[in-house]
Length: 201
Image (tube, rainbow, N blue to C red; front, side, top):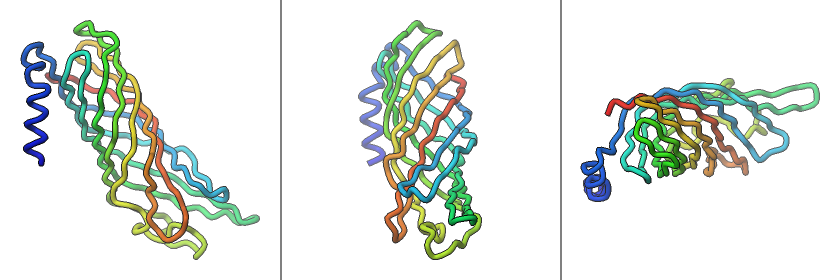
């Protein structure tokens, strides 16, 4: 399957890249502001800031394909008030995100480009931590096993290229529930991201 996908990409974008030299790749680093959303009125979560680091490949001219691999930290604090008592649980998850974006260059002037893009994102969740790890029996997340190991989301945004620098501003919408426990709890992650990359090629 991987070999077939590689062949299809070469057939689709190879002649374009060879004819016009439209191929970019390089490292990137970014700032994230993520929010965990839930379906229970009794539980609330705030905004958490983190970073991401990764790499991108961009192939195409007016229309382009941009797959990426990024390491990102996702975190949040769930709060529930029981009279004068406030229950809190911190969630920290290390993730590997693999967006597969399709974009269009609204302005395509060689060293200066203005772009828009959107596409699905696969996220692998690992090294999941809960603090405290044990809550009362009414709390939905009882252990890290109640959190999935992979989820899907959608990214959309705009980008600006100036010479060898590439700046992206995106919003990632969580479309799949991160929770797989026994209750009817729905937990999703939405992220605002600003990233800066360097085109090595």
